View (tube, rainbow, N blue to C red):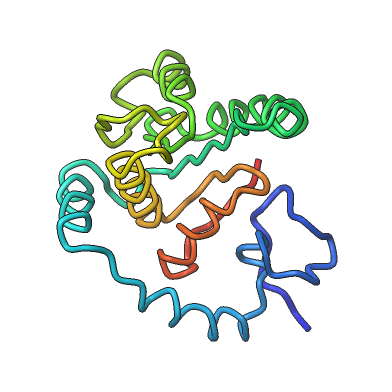
Length: 184
């Protein structure tokens, strides 16, 4: 079996025996099976409209999606995954052209602030949420804004994704499994 060129620096298995979190390494057969299933997902019209309107006003094909899972809810995973990944993310962002803009989606408001401070507000884009990211899962408005973040991320053609994050994987599938992905 021949696998597509891998853009990820890190994957879950070197032999690609699993399809979870393998992005471009997922064999075409599975993309052909799962792709149409994700294409059938429908979002409430008012949520899709909020996402679509903001995307039309702010996003363009050159915007890089950046999904940062901090694991704030799990201290062991925070230390094991986020702390070293943060350095890799900064290196990725530093290495792209200085005109690049980033759509930042995270479970942490601090990440958005930190990246905005480092790269400047014109380069760091994020949906104007009314709910805090760290506990958004506790309320319907927070979950709605998380879904909007997911839909926006799915529109990017290039994605920097946190290792082991299913959020970025679902966004990739919803976007038609086409985005070039680098896992950090």
